[in-house]
Length: 178
Ligand SMILES: [Zn+2]
Image 1 (cartoon, protein in one colour):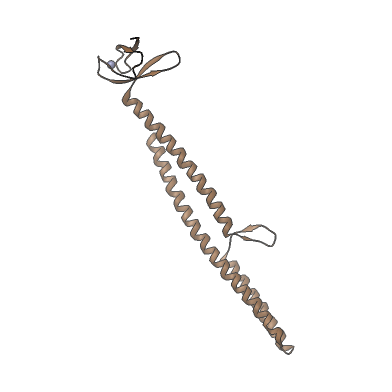
Image 2 (cartoon, rainbow, N blue to C red):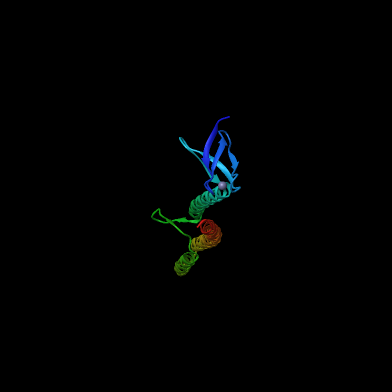
């Protein structure tokens, strides 16, 4: 069998190792060694230290995975948020606002009541129902906006909580590898 001359990575003692061996115990200091092979050279590494290196690689990979998870969460929230947004008159997207919808409803109601007064002064008639339909439609739009604003606030809270948890996880992974 071909024997390779190596030295112990812990104590430096010379070792004669079978060419195919992956693990060897140093007969001088007793260290557990793994045989590493490069293109043109072979050397030994203490197994314990190797495991530490592997652990830090694992932690780095886990940290990258958490980073990816955060990016996915951000994208998912962008899509979710678009679902709550309302289209403005100019075609842009806007977050739903309970306050703005209430102000809008009050304005429409005032105009509607002025219309009712005007129609009444002019003698009334079946056209009287029109302002009430307009006020009713504005009321439904307001309730819809308030509901969307509430859903969006809840969704945002869920998103921010998940993001905080992931950031904490990432800090733990990075802190442990330093
Ligand atoms: Zn040794």
